[in-house]
Length: 364
Ligand code: GLA
Image 1 (cartoon, rainbow, N blue to C red):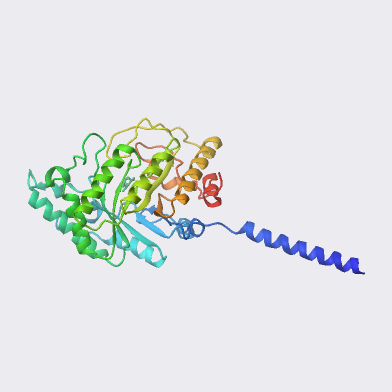
Image 2: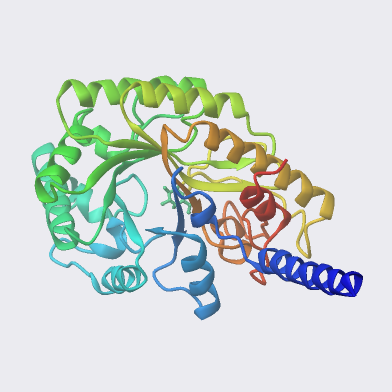
């Protein structure tokens, strides 16, 4: 009798345990929950997502969004007297309804900025004219979105890739070095509550890191508000973790929040280091049908190492943002030329890739 009861008890306990195990096994892991308490998880997305499946993927895994294009000067301010806010307003509305913080991007950049800024009739605009236009743009745009965006990438990609300190953009050529200071000042005035960031690519590399530090010190010496710096993170599988770590530590030591702002891991090796979207380059379309499993495994390993590094520096990193949501909507399908890219954590059917499981599972 005793034995029968014991047997029933054991069987029930076993079934119960199995149910609990399967409950946990079924529980989907979400990036933003797994990384809660370490840093925010973000994604850059188009003004409108393609469908509700994409929206669910986004809201399940991310708590911050960056607009890929709709808040850049070109779409927002196509001619001097005309602002077009409709698309960006919709984007903000979607973010608010879905409880997503907005990292607005970007006010001053050398690309996707209309030519009229730099012209006075047939002539090049004077310093005075361009400065007043830049300030007006920043003031109008920042005031329009004040209270609705948490943070601004104020200046994007101002550092030079070669020997100079600053890139020889029209901003720099016409306004001189302190245009960056003026931009931050105008942003602070127009939206005193937003955090203000500088954002650039290749600042994980030692030479450009030094220029970033020089810029940070210059801005700090003028007491302008600069809360953080974004390391873009358009990397390939051979990226140097040591360089990234050195930059995270160096920028933190300058008193800034550090963010990885445009993360993607291209599986196609590049013969170039720049990810300047304005540069003419080519990359082969190596995996037009599907990416070989061993390459996806290698990508998963690199993602895993990157996130181990980010976790190690969780006290310094405030956000990690992917540039795109899934392989199908990555900019790397178009840049530097049309091809089929595989750089993110979800594939074209929105299925999680091996990299996703390593990132959420903290595994190697
Ligand atoms: C740069 C810019 C982004 C975006 C990406 C790729 O890194 O900062 O706004 O254009 O390139 O699309």
